[in-house]
Image (tube, rainbow, N blue to C red; front, side, top):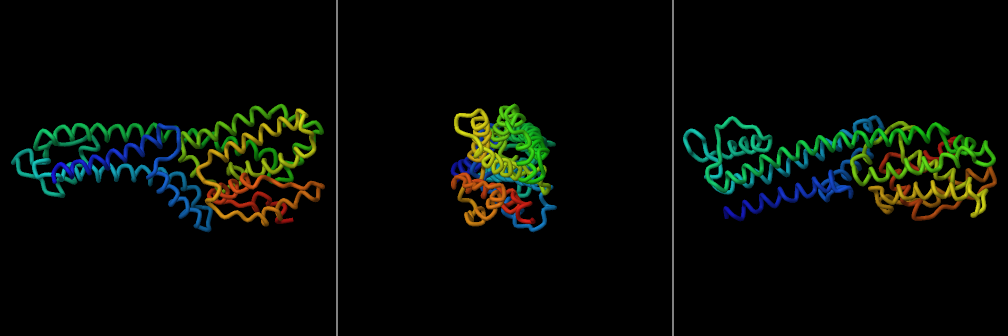
Length: 324
């Protein structure tokens, strides 16, 4: 029974660290536990009708995820220290510690602190205490480094969103901004830089998936909303150009960058129900410019899911069209 309980405790700790390192260091998105808890939390936040809570979304995800890791690590360690009476003893009397005293001892070990009133009672416990105290230190220091990286990625995300928003506050303004030059000189000259920034943010979602849950109640700082508007406008503008033209190729480069961003997004295409008729109604806006826009179903579905779980929808992408 003693060995089995130690194995159970160490298994919990092992899976905790697999999830922790997969999320913070692998560059491949969330671990299993982190993905589940963050998706549940995101659904709870999105269901709140007031977007005021959005300003606390990123902080909430960071705190809840960190708490999950610490809780699982604590449960695993506490299970180990309860495997036998001699695992933790009173330093003065040598008597086995009570359950509450083992709880207290576990907390001190994981924080790498301690005042010496309780100590490991056998060699197995001494070895495990040394390992667990080091593991607590690793989780705390790596977690702080990860936090700084997430903050930097969030700032880059907002920077790109603000950049796109400066071209217009809605699809019509963005459309007119690029169409004011017949040869699309501004768009062509900045296509490479814009694509690079989009892909940089896309890679941030893999390296720091927590960034995806830093939501914004303001349209100008909501990146997925700005990318959806830009994507729709560029799809329309590209209709003016033949495949072999520089304009067509440059626009396609940006569109592919946006599509790669969507491909790497946390939300799957089928995460939210896609209303093709609603989107078709929104896109009928372009008919006043004599354009008929029809997108790719897979891209449209991915946008729908990404928009929904960032707190937006297609009607807000086409805000001017809906309100006019």
